Length: 414
Image (tube, rainbow, N blue to C red; front, side, top):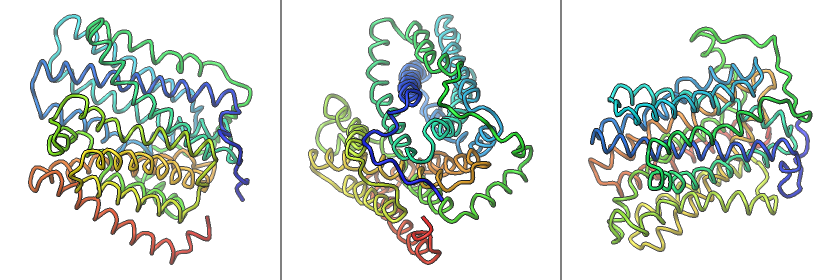
């Protein structure tokens, strides 16, 4: 039996350790985004290579697809704080690497490839361990609040990253900007050195190590045998596979088709609409303690998100498109935080990290494929058609999974 959820507003913020971690996570996410802003700009300026830009996206998501379960297994066996610190150390090492190469004007394509891959691996280390640490801090009763606020803090970091990164480029230039970025990772890294008294970091030392692909497949079978965890992981994976965030790189074309060109204020507003909606979801839902985690509700939110994306794809009015994107962001955060909460709550403690890793394979790793469904599809039939058809396919698959979950009694078990 899981404990009854805490119904107070912003329940997770009542823990000092939770408040500090959420702030540190927002800063780290902002630093991650700043690095993308600076490094992508230099890559574009120096190489003018669309293939390298495409590789940057692949290098960001493929590690989540291939390595999330392994990273989750580490969080089951070892103190998640140390794993997060390892991830932060890799992030800082990558920023230092960019800075040295910028300063010496010696950046080559193979340097960029290695740094992009290491950056992706750093994100994989952080993701499952960060979720396990949140569970250690707040326990089960405040878990939905913590996961929703963590998603909100990361969204805030993503919103601030481009602004701060752009300011650093203008004021101090890319070299000093990327060196300054290293310091932004430090608050979270240093705070994790100490052991806050309210954090339960006792790990299951008897948890089996994952040393082979057979161990990984056994883990997948074990986690997938839990209907609620399987359903939520698969549901999040469908959303990532068909759409994910693949429509965001296509915003210049959407802005142009809506009559405002591919740059300027209107393009920036369109690009920020999704994040603004997600940020509002975190604030509003937590303030009123709304949308408690329920399996049926998670399906409804996912279906509504698919419809919002479909509406955006076919919209020919800028204001309507902006509002639909903001609604999509609101629904996206609500949907992903709820599916993650349900998967995490119903995972056995001894394999919680592995279960989170499997969820991340779906919710993050499968975004790799949305570049094909939306991106390459747009090159063949047009971006509006590819996004619209992807949204329709997502809606149909979610509806089929909903029927399966109902027949398996997943709604009742949750």
